[in-house]
Length: 496
Image (tube, rainbow, N blue to C red; front, side, top):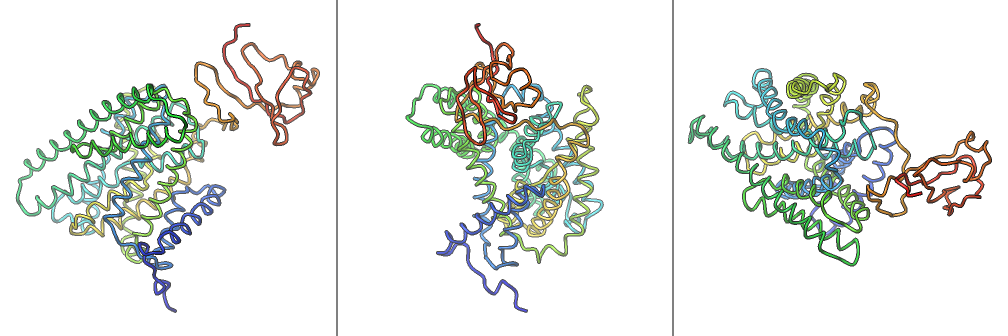
C-alpha cells in the first residue's frame, strides 16, 4: 500500500490559502468535539497538524526558521493578550509566589531535570560530551507553558481556590521568557564549550552577564513602554473600538520588537506593557477590545500548534518515544513536585493541596516545542533528536496533565462551582459601578406573589433586563415572572 505522502503538497505553494483554510476549519470543528470529551484543544490542534503533515496526508513544511519566527510572533500575541486580561488586584496577593515559581522554580526544575538526564539518559542526549547538552534539554522542557495554561484555565472557566488561578498564570508567563533566554544562551555557549574556545568559568560568567542584561532590559522597557502606553491611551480618543484594538496591538508589537532590538527579552516587555494598558489606561471600549484580542489569541494558538504539528515527523519519533516517556513521567511525578515544594517553603499558609495542584500543573505546550526549534535553526549537532524528545514529552504532558486539570482540582476540592455566564449586552461595567450577575428564578421565589415587585430585592440590587425563552424584556415592578427566567441584575451602592 502506498503511503499518503505520495500525494505531497507544498504548504508554501500557490495553494497556501486553500490549505490553510481547510486546516483551520478542521481544527475548529475538532476543538468543539474535544471540548465535549475534555481533551485540550491545543492537543487536538497538534494532532491535526500531525495528520496533515508529511507522514500523514503529505503536506510538506520544512522551513524551521519560518516556523520559529511565526511561533515567536504568535507567542508574543498570546502573552500580550494574557497581560491585558490580568488584573493587578488579582495578582497582587500572589505576586511573590508567582515570581519565585517563574525564577527560582525554573532553575530548580532545570537543575533536577538535568541531573536526571545526565545520570539516566546519557546515550540519548550525548552527555558524554558534557553536562551542557543535558542542561539545554532540561531548560527547553522546564517551563510551564503559558499558552496551555491560559487555554485550560480561562477557556474552561476553571475557578480555583487560594488564588491559584492568578498564581499559575503568573508562573507560566514568567516561565516562558526565562526559559527562552536560557535556551538562547545555551545554544550560543555549547558550540564554544565543545570547541574549547572558552573555559567553564568564562562560559558561566558570559552566560550570567547576558542573562542579567536581557532580563534587566526587558523589565525596564516593559515598565517604561507600559506606563507610556497607558498614559497615551488615556489621552487619545479614537472613533471606534477597532482602531483602539489595532493601535494597542501595535503598541504590544512595538514593545516586543524594540526590546529585542536592544538585546532585551521582548516577551517579558510585551507582557508588562499589556499589564499597564489593561489596568492603568482609560479605555472606552475595553470589553470590545478584549473580545478582539481573545479572538486573535485563539487564532495564534491554532496556527502555532498546527504549524508545530506539521514540522514534526512521527516516523522519526518512534525510536525516542520510550526514553521520552520515561523523562516525562519523572518530570511530572518527581522533579516538578520537588521544585514546587522547595520553592514554596517560605509560604506556610499555603495548604498541601494547593502545593500538590501547582505541582500537577507543570503543563507543557507550544513553548517547549518552539524553544526546541532554536537548536535546529542554528544547526546544532543532535538538534533533531532534542526536538523529537521535546515533542514527545509535550504530547504526554498534554494528555496526562492537560486532560486531568479539572478533575484533579475537583478531587483536591480546590475548584469553585462554575458561575453562569452573564449577558452584558456589550456593556463594559466599571468595578466602581457594581457587578453584573445572572440570577435564575426558582419556583420558591414565586410563592410570594409572582411579580418582580414581590421579590423584595435587597438594598443595592437592581434588575436591568429579563431573559425569557431567548428574548430580552425590559423589567417593571408589575411584570409577572416565570420559573426559569434569567434576571440580569447589577449589584452596587444605592442612594435611596
